[in-house]
Length: 303
Image 1 (cartoon, helix red, strand yellow):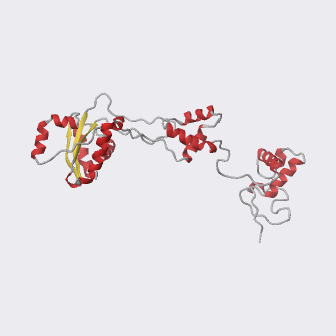
Image 2: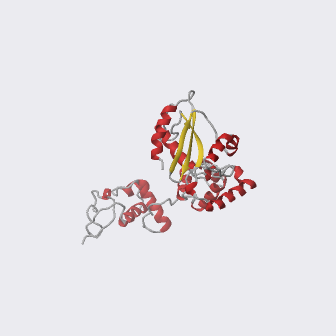
Image 3: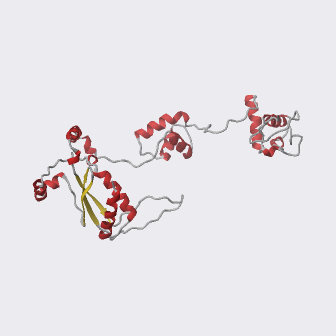
């Protein structure tokens, strides 16, 4: 059975090693440099040959031959170099510090992290920082912004009470009502494009209109959707001021439950609005009537 030796195909040259090793055994060639070839390179350079002469016939660069000789001088071994991985990273021991720093100041850019590392005496490239952050499983993402007033004592107590009272609610009888604004200039702000080139888009700038979409969300779907061609705001205080609206609802046998202040996240209709606005961006309609026609189609898709 022929002996299998890992050697570069380029090592096949017009020498006595073209088809056999030093013992005359037939060779099968694969990627990599055989150990006997590494030994011969070192022996040639030790005997006084230049690196280019030491590399001749093996299909490797003179720098590789020089590195092989230097490694043998340091380790007294002809073993191959380890392959794969980021072996030379200076940030392996700094990964914990980087994770903690980005937790403390998540708005830092990778360039700023690199500058802080430099101030600690660790000079690395932008790419090294990026690879380390990627291995940590961190992504640069959009923040979900919450009202700072939620930390206020009275607001925090009201939010805790609302959470506790939810267990006693019959959600089949609830309708969550809210409004959201839309404009005739709505469009996607992010899309795919080639690196290094601007990504251009067009939308009305000086002449656009704002409309208000009002709807209720029940457990089984959307109720009473309405588009108003002017901006309005529904709030717990605004509803109290419009006593006529409140009286109409009470006459129909409906009661009111107000969400805590600064807590729009407690209203599940916000998730429906998020889907609705994404589909409106895709439709990119530029008039009030066109937006309403698009909403009729969109509301059949949103579940």
